[in-house]
Length: 112
Image (cartoon, rainbow, N blue to C red; front, side, top):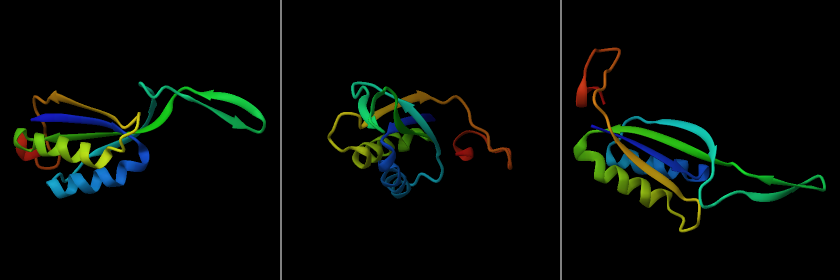
């Protein structure tokens, strides 16, 4: 099992969710986060005062998947989140040792 963590632009979130549903992903966790990478920040003007926005809003998506779904999951995220501009995001894949479904007590792939 793997834990796929994707950081994407917030306005691409619905597209990513739909793409993951088509792949067969039944659940995910989404968190509103802020950060920056190569995109850095930008300068905005508010009531005549200029200020720097260092941290940009992003959406963090976490999905636990079985090993056989990993490749299709990553492809779905890349295809649906990509705009071709700086700041499209990142995907991280980590090993997931175990998962439990609290309600039924199922473990492993069955808990996903």
